[in-house]
Image (cartoon, rainbow, N blue to C red; front, side, top):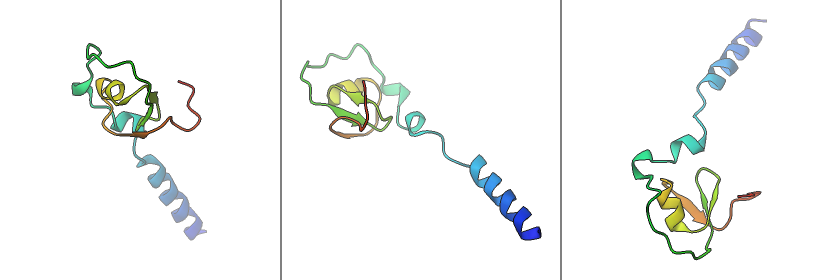
Length: 77
């Protein structure tokens, strides 16, 4: 019984220590600039916040710190 209680306590501690969502970690608020002019070429990128942006410039002006080429899986943006 002692092992079960110890296991439960360990699980609860692990759950409370999980990292915040990637969306909170990957936006640099100091780089958000909605006035940045971007060309209107659709070359989608998937931001670390799991949001599809029309191109790299649009991701950058939103403060996204990293992305990969292509739309995000399951994205409906």
